[in-house]
Image (cartoon, rainbow, N blue to C red; front, side):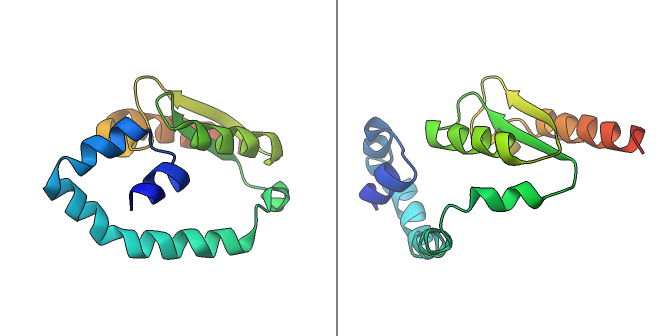
Length: 122
């Protein structure tokens, strides 16, 4: 589990240590581990396939947080280069991968702004 958090999720070592020191949190994460590992293996089997996204012809908004792990930021930056109709890239300040939990209102505003922009261009 700790290896999974460090190598796949790319969580910093200090965070993994802190989570391990909280037994109730560690138990909850361990309960999710088998499904997460299965998902990771299925995704890995597909290969990177970034070029597949070049065929997505719908307006797109990429939403991330400036505190997201580096590997996630790299992924949406790569997507932004490949997707043909990226209308916006929104980076929420002071938020990370779980912004839908930590800043649901800001996420909703970003989605609303994007939706409005798509509807206005019809």
